[in-house]
Length: 373
Image 1: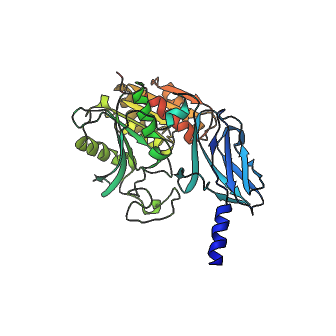
Image 2 (image 1 turned 135 degrees about the vertical axis):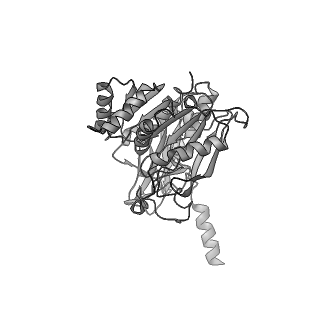
Image 3 (image 1 turned 60 degrees about the horizontal axis):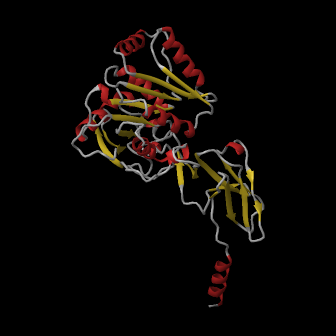
């Protein structure tokens, strides 16, 4: 009884910690309880601490705290370091997985319509986000993807489809979790800025049928290269029409070029690039986000495929990348090739590098450009 009484007393003495606290000026206060720690800090993707840590100060009650400068409206991620060990914030239940790294998230919003508001769940009509399995005859497997149906989808009216592709190390959960795709689409559609559309987010790793823990390979540690050594019967581009055909069969879609768009980030941008010249008359809108798409110089077949693509006059060929992105040179070479052949495209460049903050921006912009003709 004495031990139980002591434990209850200790539990009662533990201060109640709230973290993070979003202040009215947009600054954020982090709190972490550990009376035995010697050094605690916060690292994240906020403007003031990129590439360094924000040191926390210990209070008499054993709670470590620090407050940032006012932050711009945005979705932010962070973690806490305690004596050199990385932790997620135990007071914050909102956590995202990026490949094998877990980070906490929070949103700063100062007014309706800013980026923080766009990435948040607002009081608007909501679409449906589902994980579905489809058959891929080309790969010889059953595979999983995420499908967003707009709020007005009723199985009667046909809707256009956006195919949204993740990057290296991602899977069919990436755009929904890290990219906030359903929140962005819900809010843009509610504001009348985007046409109601179906969004299909497949798994772009042919050797893997689904995200880690969601297929028969079990609960392996994701590393971005899982099972690549096993190879696959076909590439993502070669098997892509399995996805399109399955979606057209199981949903009420506009089954023609004008009702299809494809966009992707990094590796998914490279897939988008390959899909664009492999199926030149299947999609009308292409979005290459920080794309890992390499031009094939002195390749007659590639030149002919690109010529066929642009002779078919797609409605949009859009390239977006950050100024600090490590794939900038590859994208510059692609633009040089398009310029040399007088192929029309739109180009968007902003600050930042190879980061989800930019890809959420690119999805927001691209979604407002498509299916409006």
